Image 1 (cartoon, rainbow, N blue to C red):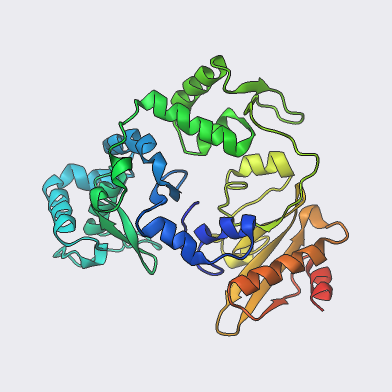
Image 2 (tube, helix red, strand yellow; image 1 turned 60 degrees about the vertical axis):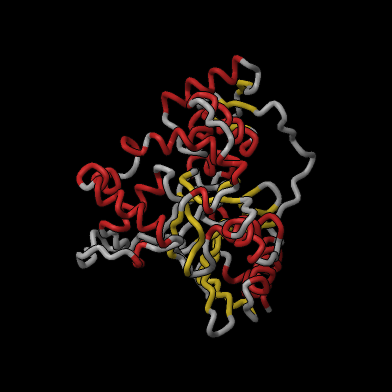
Length: 357
């Protein structure tokens, strides 16, 4: 479940379970991620993600490659100030769990961009996190708290032998194939952001072993691969609002191939240039993405605000507005909001406002 800082509605990693299960106590997810015995841990899966803790050994090869594959600022601090990085690790060892703000850097934090304040202490901690020498012990608000893996992760996980790189990558591709059902090579490798050449080699090995079946999909130009255990249901009964970072839609090319929806995140687009809105969630109904809505939780007013509502391809079949209202009301109740209100922006907005009464 991808972690993201935007909180205009709710933090993204809480949404996938709501989409699949309906209203649930978010404390269950927090307990699974940040209390012993942990079921989840934070690491770079697709992006920063909550992952099953049992998969930690499958990412050790990525940790070992931090010197070459971590982001530039992290690699630079390790290369230019290795002693400082080791001193930060010792601070975590002595004082953890702790956040970057608790480290005395001796230098006023420098803003390197419009969104993130990554001074040297933060870079050092993120290098240690990428390389697996520290892990996330919890969150304070949205701030990550760092501690040693041996004080956070289950002993049985840490004692699991480290698989070789090829074996770990094959297993990650098996997970990808089970999750996606049918997928192109790019889809498979994007699920855990594997390298192109390595993923291609591992896919070929899984095909040779009969663990992936090469297939053609009508309308797809690329060769696809089928998970042999995948089954096509007679009918898909689904109704869900999806996070922009949900695994069903995060690979935008696949979303367009499967559902015909050109879906783009417009958070960083200037307001006057946005097409559909700031924080837009696709609406899954049956086996189709039938609409999209720009949502905001107005917590002080107790309102789930629909700032815009759009049908897929400029129209929505009969009944979509009513189904969407039911899902919006369910979400509002889950978020502790009293009511749903809709603005008049978007081609679906009139039908949605009528359905809201």
